[in-house]
Length: 399
Ligand SMILES: Cc1cc2nc3c(=O)[nH]c(=O)nc-3n(C[C@H](O)[C@H](O)[C@H](O)COP(=O)(O)OP(=O)(O)OC[C@H]3O[C@@H](n4cnc5c(N)ncnc54)[C@H](O)[C@@H]3O)c2cc1C
Image (cartoon, rainbow, N blue to C red; front, side, top):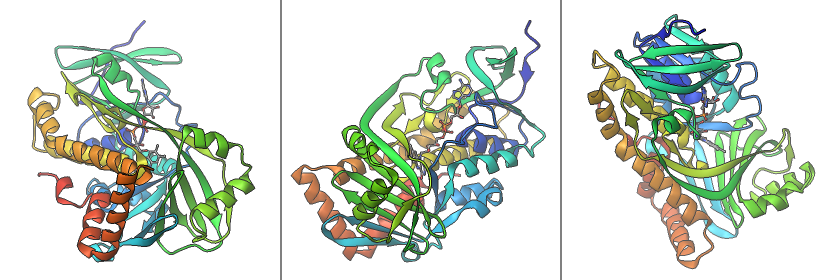
C-alpha cells in the first residue's frame, strides 16, 4: 500500500553535482526540498577518476550560496594553461593575471566534490534526501505535480509545485515528459587516468592537440595530475591494449616531455563523448537542468560550469519572491534567460572539437592562425580566457 505523498516546494530528481548544488541553493532560500537519488550514497561516484575544473565564475556562484567553503580545501588552483600542438610552434600560455584574475579556476576530484557538497546539503533541515530511490513517473495535481518513487522496499509519492530533472544525460524525467533531444555522437571517448610526474609545473594545466585527439593534464596537487585523452573509438582499441607502463610512456611522449617521466597511479576509465541539447527546457511544472538539458564535449571543461550558471539564474528568479515557483511565468523567464549561454557553449565546444582535431586542411589553417594570433595578442588571449572562465559578457547573468 502507498503512504501519503511527501510534500515539499520542489522535487529534485538526481543528486549528482547539479542536483546537489541546486538543493543547497534552494534550501538556503528557505524552500523545502525533496532530493531523489537512484544510487546508494555509500557507492556513488567511487569509480569516477575525473578531476573537474571549476571556472572562476563558478567559484563566485558557489561562494554566493555558501558552498565554496565545503570544497575549497579539496581544490587545486589553476593559474595558467599551456596550449600547444604537437610539432607546431608557437605554443600559447593563458594566464589568469593577464585578465586581472587570481586564478583561471580550480580542479577538484569529482567524487570529493560530490561528497563534500552532499555534506553541506545535509546541514539544511528543510532538505529531505532519499537515496536508493528511483523516479519512474509523474502526473499533474491541483497543487502542482506528483512523482512516483520506487525504492527496494517501498513505493512513495512526492508532491510539489515544481519538479526539476537533474537526472543526467539519459534523464527519465525528460523521457516521461516527452521532451526530445538533438544529439550528436562524437564517436570518441575520454580516457581518464591519474598520473604522477617527475617534473610538475606550478598551478598550470596543459592542453595539447595531438594527431589522435586532445590531451589534457589537470593538476591535482604535488606531483599528481589527471590525464584526459579524447580518442576516437578506433584509437581507443589500440591504446587499450597497452599495459600501464606503455600507456605512461605514450602520454609522456604525446605531451612533448613537458612533465618529465610519468607513472600511472590509478586505473583508466573511459567516458563516451556526445553533444546533446533538449529541445525544450521546461514543460508544465517541470524544468530540465544540467546534463538533462545540455551535454557538451569536455574539451573546454564547460558542462558542469554551465549547469551551475543554470542554478544561479534559477535561484535569482526564485529570489524575487515568486509565490509559486512552478508557475509558467517563472519557467518561461528562466528559459529566455538561459538561451544565449546554452547556445554559446554548444557552439564553442563543438567548434573547438572540430577545429582542433580535424585533419582537413582548411581547419588546420584556422587552428594555426588562431594559435599564432593567441601567441601574439593579449586581447585575443583575454577573450579566450573569458570564454573558459565564464567571466565574459555572454556569460554574465541578469540580476
Ligand atoms: C571526461 C569528462 C570530463 C569533464 N570535465 C569537466 C570539467 O572539468 N568541468 C566541467 O564543468 N564539466 C566537466 N564535465 C561535464 C560534467 O561532468 C557534467 O556536466 C556534470 O557532471 C553533469 O552533472 P549532472 O548532475 O547534471 O548529471 P549526472 O552527474 O549524470 O547526475 C545525474 C544523477 O541522477 C541520478 N539519476 C538518474 N536517473 C534517475 C532516476 N530515474 N531516479 C533517481 N535518480 C536518477 C543518477 O544516478 C545521477 O546521480 C566533464 C565530462 C566528462 C565526460
